[in-house]
Length: 89
Image (tube, rainbow, N blue to C red; front, side):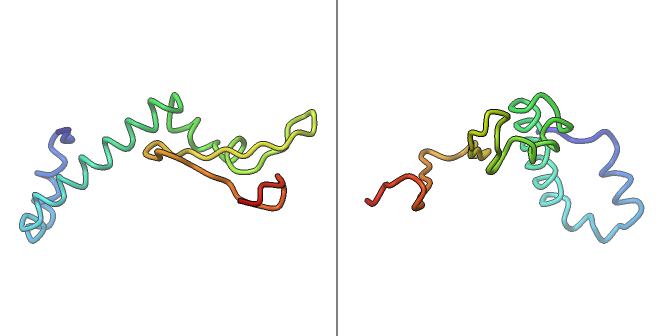
């Protein structure tokens, strides 16, 4: 578990009513921290991830080829259906 140094203490000092939700706030912080680390590991940094629109989704290469990419770290399988590939099953 990763906890920001002193942030929760300052938060609860500012609003003591939030102390009742301490466990859930810490859980949410840890979920955020884990996801942020996964993004940084996959894309080098959050800055690179924020530029994902340049390579994710449908993109057209300089040679005219069309590429479709998605960031699906938990996917076990992916399929793309459409009338563009003559696949009728």
